[in-house]
Length: 350
Image 1 (cartoon, one colour):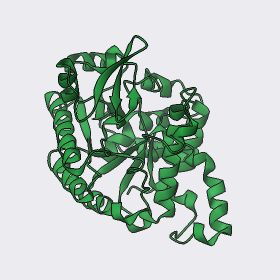
Image 2 (tube, helix red, strand yellow):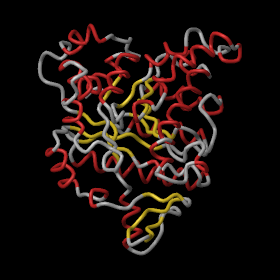
Image 3 (tube, rainbow, N blue to C red):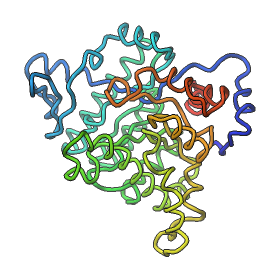
Image 4 (cartoon, helix red, strand yellow):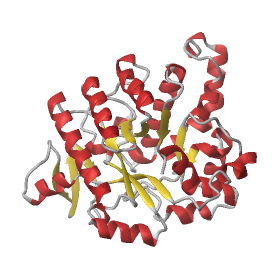
Protein backbone atom coordinates (compact mmCIF):
# COMPACT_ATOMS: atom_id res chain seq x y z
CA UNK A 1 0.00 0.00 0.00
CA UNK A 2 1.10 3.58 -0.58
CA UNK A 3 2.54 5.13 2.57
CA UNK A 4 0.50 7.94 4.10
CA UNK A 5 1.23 11.52 3.12
CA UNK A 6 0.42 14.62 5.09
CA UNK A 7 -1.16 17.80 3.83
CA UNK A 8 2.26 19.49 4.01
CA UNK A 9 3.72 17.40 1.18
CA UNK A 10 0.65 17.31 -1.04
CA UNK A 11 2.47 19.49 -3.57
CA UNK A 12 5.21 16.90 -4.05
CA UNK A 13 2.56 14.26 -4.68
CA UNK A 14 0.90 16.40 -7.33
CA UNK A 15 4.27 16.95 -8.99
CA UNK A 16 4.59 13.19 -9.49
CA UNK A 17 2.33 13.75 -12.53
CA UNK A 18 4.20 16.62 -14.25
CA UNK A 19 3.39 15.44 -17.78
CA UNK A 20 -0.29 16.32 -17.74
CA UNK A 21 -3.24 17.14 -15.52
CA UNK A 22 -4.81 14.11 -13.88
CA UNK A 23 -8.12 12.93 -15.31
CA UNK A 24 -11.12 13.66 -13.11
CA UNK A 25 -12.12 10.22 -11.85
CA UNK A 26 -15.35 9.39 -10.01
CA UNK A 27 -14.89 6.04 -8.24
CA UNK A 28 -18.42 5.84 -6.80
CA UNK A 29 -20.93 5.49 -9.65
CA UNK A 30 -23.68 2.94 -10.05
CA UNK A 31 -25.21 1.18 -13.02
CA UNK A 32 -28.43 -0.83 -12.65
CA UNK A 33 -27.99 -4.15 -14.48
CA UNK A 34 -29.33 -4.03 -18.01
CA UNK A 35 -30.70 -7.55 -17.60
CA UNK A 36 -32.94 -6.25 -14.82
CA UNK A 37 -34.34 -3.57 -17.14
CA UNK A 38 -34.93 -6.12 -19.89
CA UNK A 39 -36.83 -8.38 -17.49
CA UNK A 40 -38.85 -5.43 -16.19
CA UNK A 41 -39.73 -4.34 -19.72
CA UNK A 42 -41.13 -7.83 -20.26
CA UNK A 43 -43.08 -7.71 -17.00
CA UNK A 44 -40.79 -10.24 -15.32
CA UNK A 45 -38.57 -10.27 -12.25
CA UNK A 46 -34.81 -10.84 -12.33
CA UNK A 47 -33.32 -13.00 -9.59
CA UNK A 48 -36.27 -11.96 -7.45
CA UNK A 49 -35.90 -8.24 -8.17
CA UNK A 50 -38.91 -6.56 -9.72
CA UNK A 51 -40.27 -3.18 -10.68
CA UNK A 52 -43.18 -2.12 -8.46
CA UNK A 53 -45.46 0.91 -8.17
CA UNK A 54 -46.03 2.74 -4.89
CA UNK A 55 -47.70 6.11 -4.43
CA UNK A 56 -47.72 6.77 -8.18
CA UNK A 57 -43.95 6.21 -8.45
CA UNK A 58 -41.87 3.24 -9.56
CA UNK A 59 -39.45 1.42 -7.27
CA UNK A 60 -37.12 -1.55 -7.45
CA UNK A 61 -38.04 -4.29 -4.99
CA UNK A 62 -35.16 -6.60 -4.08
CA UNK A 63 -35.74 -9.00 -1.19
CA UNK A 64 -38.40 -6.66 0.25
CA UNK A 65 -35.99 -3.71 0.11
CA UNK A 66 -37.34 -0.85 -1.97
CA UNK A 67 -35.08 1.47 -3.97
CA UNK A 68 -36.41 4.59 -5.56
CA UNK A 69 -38.37 6.36 -6.72
CA UNK A 70 -36.81 5.72 -10.11
CA UNK A 71 -35.49 8.83 -11.85
CA UNK A 72 -34.54 9.25 -15.54
CA UNK A 73 -30.81 9.12 -14.72
CA UNK A 74 -31.20 5.56 -13.45
CA UNK A 75 -31.34 4.26 -17.01
CA UNK A 76 -29.08 6.02 -19.48
CA UNK A 77 -27.53 5.03 -22.77
CA UNK A 78 -23.75 5.19 -22.99
CA UNK A 79 -23.94 8.42 -24.97
CA UNK A 80 -26.40 9.96 -22.50
CA UNK A 81 -24.17 9.00 -19.61
CA UNK A 82 -21.10 10.52 -21.25
CA UNK A 83 -23.00 13.71 -22.05
CA UNK A 84 -23.97 14.02 -18.39
CA UNK A 85 -20.37 13.32 -17.30
CA UNK A 86 -19.13 16.02 -19.66
CA UNK A 87 -21.63 18.50 -18.26
CA UNK A 88 -20.24 18.08 -14.72
CA UNK A 89 -16.57 17.73 -15.62
CA UNK A 90 -16.03 14.00 -15.08
CA UNK A 91 -13.51 12.29 -17.36
CA UNK A 92 -13.79 8.72 -16.04
CA UNK A 93 -16.41 6.83 -14.05
CA UNK A 94 -15.54 3.61 -12.25
CA UNK A 95 -18.93 1.93 -12.34
CA UNK A 96 -20.37 -0.66 -9.97
CA UNK A 97 -23.73 -2.23 -9.25
CA UNK A 98 -26.11 -0.57 -6.78
CA UNK A 99 -25.95 -2.29 -3.37
CA UNK A 100 -29.44 -3.78 -3.66
CA UNK A 101 -28.06 -5.99 -6.42
CA UNK A 102 -25.31 -7.51 -4.26
CA UNK A 103 -27.72 -10.46 -4.06
CA UNK A 104 -25.99 -12.11 -1.10
CA UNK A 105 -29.41 -13.40 -0.03
CA UNK A 106 -29.67 -15.74 -3.04
CA UNK A 107 -28.50 -19.32 -2.95
CA UNK A 108 -24.90 -19.91 -4.02
CA UNK A 109 -25.71 -21.01 -7.56
CA UNK A 110 -27.99 -18.03 -8.21
CA UNK A 111 -25.54 -15.67 -6.53
CA UNK A 112 -22.74 -16.84 -8.79
CA UNK A 113 -24.90 -16.54 -11.89
CA UNK A 114 -26.22 -13.07 -11.02
CA UNK A 115 -22.74 -11.77 -10.18
CA UNK A 116 -21.32 -12.93 -13.49
CA UNK A 117 -24.25 -11.43 -15.41
CA UNK A 118 -23.82 -8.10 -13.62
CA UNK A 119 -20.07 -8.09 -14.16
CA UNK A 120 -20.38 -8.91 -17.84
CA UNK A 121 -22.78 -5.99 -18.17
CA UNK A 122 -20.35 -3.62 -16.45
CA UNK A 123 -17.54 -4.81 -18.70
CA UNK A 124 -19.74 -4.32 -21.75
CA UNK A 125 -20.34 -0.71 -20.74
CA UNK A 126 -16.65 -0.10 -20.11
CA UNK A 127 -15.63 -1.71 -23.40
CA UNK A 128 -17.79 0.69 -25.40
CA UNK A 129 -15.82 3.70 -24.15
CA UNK A 130 -12.70 2.40 -22.39
CA UNK A 131 -11.28 5.90 -22.09
CA UNK A 132 -14.34 6.99 -20.09
CA UNK A 133 -15.33 3.93 -18.04
CA UNK A 134 -13.82 1.25 -15.86
CA UNK A 135 -15.55 -1.05 -13.38
CA UNK A 136 -15.60 -2.78 -10.01
CA UNK A 137 -17.02 -6.30 -9.96
CA UNK A 138 -19.60 -7.66 -7.57
CA UNK A 139 -18.79 -10.96 -5.84
CA UNK A 140 -21.05 -13.88 -4.83
CA UNK A 141 -20.17 -13.95 -1.14
CA UNK A 142 -22.69 -16.72 -0.43
CA UNK A 143 -19.77 -19.01 -1.23
CA UNK A 144 -16.33 -17.59 -0.52
CA UNK A 145 -14.71 -19.90 -3.06
CA UNK A 146 -17.06 -18.57 -5.71
CA UNK A 147 -16.23 -15.03 -4.60
CA UNK A 148 -12.50 -15.66 -5.01
CA UNK A 149 -13.05 -17.21 -8.44
CA UNK A 150 -15.14 -14.25 -9.56
CA UNK A 151 -12.52 -11.79 -8.35
CA UNK A 152 -9.83 -13.68 -10.26
CA UNK A 153 -12.01 -13.64 -13.38
CA UNK A 154 -12.78 -9.95 -12.95
CA UNK A 155 -9.14 -8.94 -12.65
CA UNK A 156 -8.17 -11.10 -15.63
CA UNK A 157 -10.96 -9.37 -17.58
CA UNK A 158 -9.57 -5.90 -16.88
CA UNK A 159 -11.72 -4.73 -13.97
CA UNK A 160 -10.07 -2.60 -11.29
CA UNK A 161 -11.28 -4.61 -8.32
CA UNK A 162 -14.57 -5.31 -6.62
CA UNK A 163 -17.37 -3.63 -4.72
CA UNK A 164 -18.27 -5.34 -1.43
CA UNK A 165 -21.14 -4.88 0.96
CA UNK A 166 -20.13 -3.71 4.43
CA UNK A 167 -21.21 -7.08 5.80
CA UNK A 168 -22.06 -10.50 4.41
CA UNK A 169 -25.58 -11.31 5.55
CA UNK A 170 -24.79 -9.86 8.97
CA UNK A 171 -21.28 -11.30 9.23
CA UNK A 172 -18.48 -8.77 9.79
CA UNK A 173 -15.13 -8.95 8.03
CA UNK A 174 -13.20 -9.91 11.14
CA UNK A 175 -14.66 -13.38 10.50
CA UNK A 176 -11.75 -15.34 9.06
CA UNK A 177 -14.06 -17.42 6.88
CA UNK A 178 -14.22 -14.35 4.60
CA UNK A 179 -10.48 -13.74 4.49
CA UNK A 180 -9.71 -15.81 1.36
CA UNK A 181 -11.15 -12.87 -0.60
CA UNK A 182 -8.70 -10.50 1.11
CA UNK A 183 -5.85 -12.91 0.43
CA UNK A 184 -6.79 -13.08 -3.24
CA UNK A 185 -7.26 -9.31 -3.50
CA UNK A 186 -3.83 -8.64 -2.05
CA UNK A 187 -2.20 -11.13 -4.42
CA UNK A 188 -4.08 -9.81 -7.46
CA UNK A 189 -3.68 -6.12 -6.65
CA UNK A 190 -7.46 -5.76 -6.59
CA UNK A 191 -8.98 -2.59 -5.14
CA UNK A 192 -11.90 -3.39 -2.80
CA UNK A 193 -14.58 -0.71 -2.54
CA UNK A 194 -17.02 -1.11 0.36
CA UNK A 195 -20.59 0.13 0.12
CA UNK A 196 -23.28 -0.16 2.83
CA UNK A 197 -26.56 -2.00 2.45
CA UNK A 198 -29.23 -3.24 4.87
CA UNK A 199 -27.69 -1.36 7.82
CA UNK A 200 -27.48 -2.58 11.39
CA UNK A 201 -30.34 -1.19 13.47
CA UNK A 202 -32.58 -0.83 10.44
CA UNK A 203 -35.63 -1.82 12.49
CA UNK A 204 -35.12 1.37 14.54
CA UNK A 205 -34.66 3.58 11.47
CA UNK A 206 -37.93 3.08 9.63
CA UNK A 207 -38.78 6.79 9.39
CA UNK A 208 -37.25 10.01 8.09
CA UNK A 209 -35.00 8.21 5.56
CA UNK A 210 -32.80 7.41 8.56
CA UNK A 211 -31.77 3.98 7.28
CA UNK A 212 -29.86 5.89 4.62
CA UNK A 213 -28.85 9.16 6.27
CA UNK A 214 -27.81 7.57 9.58
CA UNK A 215 -27.63 3.87 8.77
CA UNK A 216 -25.29 3.97 5.79
CA UNK A 217 -22.51 5.94 7.53
CA UNK A 218 -22.98 3.68 10.56
CA UNK A 219 -22.52 0.60 8.38
CA UNK A 220 -19.24 1.94 7.01
CA UNK A 221 -18.08 2.63 10.55
CA UNK A 222 -18.88 -0.87 11.79
CA UNK A 223 -17.11 -2.44 8.82
CA UNK A 224 -13.99 -0.31 9.25
CA UNK A 225 -13.90 -1.05 12.98
CA UNK A 226 -14.27 -4.80 12.45
CA UNK A 227 -11.54 -4.83 9.79
CA UNK A 228 -9.11 -2.84 11.93
CA UNK A 229 -9.85 -4.51 15.27
CA UNK A 230 -9.97 -7.95 13.68
CA UNK A 231 -6.38 -7.64 12.47
CA UNK A 232 -7.15 -7.69 8.75
CA UNK A 233 -4.70 -4.90 7.93
CA UNK A 234 -1.88 -6.59 9.83
CA UNK A 235 -2.59 -9.91 8.12
CA UNK A 236 -2.83 -8.31 4.65
CA UNK A 237 -0.64 -5.18 4.84
CA UNK A 238 -0.56 -4.59 1.08
CA UNK A 239 -4.30 -4.75 0.46
CA UNK A 240 -6.12 -1.72 -0.96
CA UNK A 241 -9.44 -1.11 0.80
CA UNK A 242 -11.69 1.89 0.18
CA UNK A 243 -14.88 2.97 1.94
CA UNK A 244 -17.72 4.99 0.51
CA UNK A 245 -19.36 7.98 2.21
CA UNK A 246 -16.06 9.15 3.62
CA UNK A 247 -15.85 6.05 5.80
CA UNK A 248 -18.91 7.04 7.78
CA UNK A 249 -18.17 8.09 11.35
CA UNK A 250 -14.86 6.22 11.66
CA UNK A 251 -12.53 9.20 11.41
CA UNK A 252 -14.59 11.22 13.89
CA UNK A 253 -14.91 8.35 16.37
CA UNK A 254 -11.27 7.29 16.21
CA UNK A 255 -10.22 8.82 19.56
CA UNK A 256 -12.88 6.82 21.39
CA UNK A 257 -11.77 3.61 19.69
CA UNK A 258 -8.18 4.46 20.65
CA UNK A 259 -9.30 4.89 24.26
CA UNK A 260 -10.83 1.42 24.20
CA UNK A 261 -7.57 0.03 22.82
CA UNK A 262 -5.70 1.55 25.77
CA UNK A 263 -8.00 0.46 28.59
CA UNK A 264 -9.60 -2.81 27.40
CA UNK A 265 -7.63 -5.93 26.60
CA UNK A 266 -10.24 -7.27 24.19
CA UNK A 267 -9.98 -4.09 22.12
CA UNK A 268 -6.26 -4.56 21.49
CA UNK A 269 -5.86 -8.31 21.03
CA UNK A 270 -5.23 -8.25 17.28
CA UNK A 271 -3.54 -4.88 16.88
CA UNK A 272 0.08 -3.80 16.67
CA UNK A 273 -0.61 -0.07 17.02
CA UNK A 274 -3.37 2.43 17.76
CA UNK A 275 -6.61 1.80 15.83
CA UNK A 276 -6.54 5.36 14.47
CA UNK A 277 -3.18 4.69 12.82
CA UNK A 278 -4.81 2.05 10.61
CA UNK A 279 -7.20 4.63 9.20
CA UNK A 280 -4.22 5.94 7.23
CA UNK A 281 -3.94 2.56 5.48
CA UNK A 282 -7.48 2.75 4.06
CA UNK A 283 -8.87 4.83 1.19
CA UNK A 284 -12.11 6.84 1.27
CA UNK A 285 -14.34 8.64 -1.16
CA UNK A 286 -15.03 12.32 -0.54
CA UNK A 287 -18.78 11.94 0.04
CA UNK A 288 -18.98 13.61 3.45
CA UNK A 289 -21.63 16.18 2.40
CA UNK A 290 -19.73 18.93 4.21
CA UNK A 291 -16.50 20.77 3.49
CA UNK A 292 -15.59 20.94 7.17
CA UNK A 293 -16.00 17.18 7.39
CA UNK A 294 -13.97 16.62 4.23
CA UNK A 295 -11.13 18.73 5.61
CA UNK A 296 -11.32 16.79 8.89
CA UNK A 297 -11.09 13.50 6.97
CA UNK A 298 -8.05 14.72 5.04
CA UNK A 299 -6.37 15.79 8.28
CA UNK A 300 -7.12 12.46 9.93
CA UNK A 301 -6.13 10.01 7.17
CA UNK A 302 -3.83 11.94 4.83
CA UNK A 303 -4.45 13.69 1.55
CA UNK A 304 -3.33 10.63 -0.44
CA UNK A 305 -6.23 8.60 0.96
CA UNK A 306 -9.26 10.52 -0.36
CA UNK A 307 -10.79 10.18 -3.83
CA UNK A 308 -13.71 11.64 -5.74
CA UNK A 309 -16.97 9.75 -5.23
CA UNK A 310 -20.42 11.03 -6.17
CA UNK A 311 -22.81 8.08 -5.62
CA UNK A 312 -24.26 8.82 -9.06
CA UNK A 313 -27.15 8.64 -9.92
CA UNK A 314 -28.85 8.53 -6.54
CA UNK A 315 -30.47 11.29 -4.52
CA UNK A 316 -27.96 11.20 -1.66
CA UNK A 317 -25.03 11.76 -4.00
CA UNK A 318 -23.23 14.86 -5.22
CA UNK A 319 -24.89 16.40 -8.25
CA UNK A 320 -21.67 18.04 -9.41
CA UNK A 321 -18.81 16.44 -7.46
CA UNK A 322 -15.92 18.28 -9.12
CA UNK A 323 -17.51 21.66 -8.46
CA UNK A 324 -18.34 20.62 -4.90
CA UNK A 325 -14.72 19.77 -4.10
CA UNK A 326 -13.42 22.85 -5.89
CA UNK A 327 -15.76 25.12 -3.93
CA UNK A 328 -14.19 24.19 -0.60
CA UNK A 329 -12.27 26.98 1.11
CA UNK A 330 -10.70 24.58 3.62
CA UNK A 331 -8.38 22.55 1.39
CA UNK A 332 -5.72 23.75 -1.01
CA UNK A 333 -5.88 23.69 -4.79
CA UNK A 334 -3.24 20.96 -4.84
CA UNK A 335 -5.29 18.88 -2.42
CA UNK A 336 -8.39 19.38 -4.54
CA UNK A 337 -6.55 18.12 -7.62
CA UNK A 338 -5.42 14.99 -5.77
CA UNK A 339 -8.96 14.24 -4.58
CA UNK A 340 -10.55 14.96 -7.95
CA UNK A 341 -8.23 12.68 -9.88
CA UNK A 342 -4.60 12.41 -8.85
CA UNK A 343 -5.08 9.82 -6.12
CA UNK A 344 -7.31 7.54 -8.18
CA UNK A 345 -4.97 7.86 -11.15
CA UNK A 346 -2.08 6.69 -8.99
CA UNK A 347 -3.83 3.92 -7.07
CA UNK A 348 -6.03 2.52 -9.85
CA UNK A 349 -3.37 2.94 -12.53
CA UNK A 350 -5.21 5.12 -15.04
